[in-house]
Image (cartoon, rainbow, N blue to C red; front, side, top):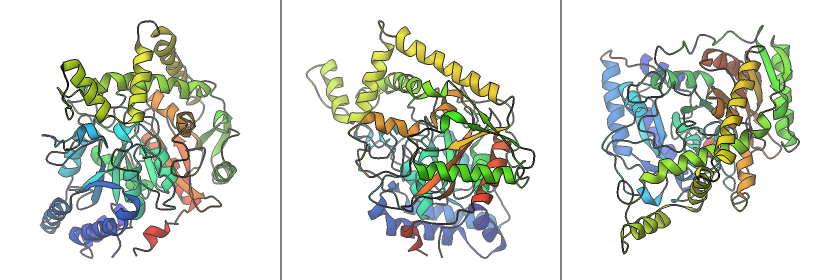
Length: 488
């Protein structure tokens, strides 16, 4: 059997007795064994632990103990979420060999829900990147074309879902790191409202921006994963108190009467023609299916990228100070403490992490704080204000997820600015804290996936999923990478 099926279909089959979790998990592990040499999506594949969890799930389901929609489902985890007893590296040499003594809240909730954790996935080091090339353990490759990147920083998680070595996966989204790789690999990727999912146990990049979200093959599957991991956590001071919105309330309701805003600032000249065409086609069909479409201008979007690349590195420079060879990190001996810390960080951090730490430290320095970091925070407030004003007139905002499809490995690593521009459409939702989702809607002339982004106001997940499901139905995207197709 193939593990390339939806979570909902697999869950139904396990409950009617036509499928077991062990069979499903073995299929996912087989897919990993057949594809990992080509894509390098996993850093750690926990074969023994996954099969033990699958056996337990079968036993519980057979006894009538149903833990929910992910019971018995193979799920992969980005390797910046700590896992008790399983190495967690953030794709960095400085954490190589680190085995945490506890698990992140999202991991605990998956395990409490009966999910089968298959392993830890590759990422740009400390989640700093947009291509999963900045990993100390080698890049992840796109299964649609292994000479191209899968996007980042959660590229490994996206690829596990694309090839079927997991039915769902978790990533972290700081500036688009779930949605952009979802777009480039042809899967669904969703960033929840900031605070809806606990960050406890997520090794931080930029604490005011980071949010954990799911990768799945369908929008309905994303609803199921989010329903398990969402909710208040007393361990996380930024966690939203109160109950979780009814996430599937809008599923099946279509687009009739939904007010859709097309963001004019997301119609950039440098966006590839195939992307522009696919997005325009979907918007036209949304209108034909009952949506009320209007153009919306959000002037502050022009400055969002610049603001992000001051705020995120500034927070990173503070967060990564703990990796010094004393508190955390593999130590390199030196003549004195200062020399030891310097050598430890020089040896342990890659070039992109060092670049961002230096940028962030400079932006926070006494002589430049107001001119750089202070101004960036003002722009962030403008972005949030513009979005809040827009949502007074429309229910959702739409546009491309990424200005391009997957680019070749190495094409942008020599010029960081061109790499940073790949996140130009995803960053605003992180600055505002609002939810957003990427849905695959087609292929370009090279056969590479194109993603369509839907954004909604804070805690607007029910409407977000409603519209995303309708887009999914309109696009009827059912292609799969040849690499995955060969596994069937």
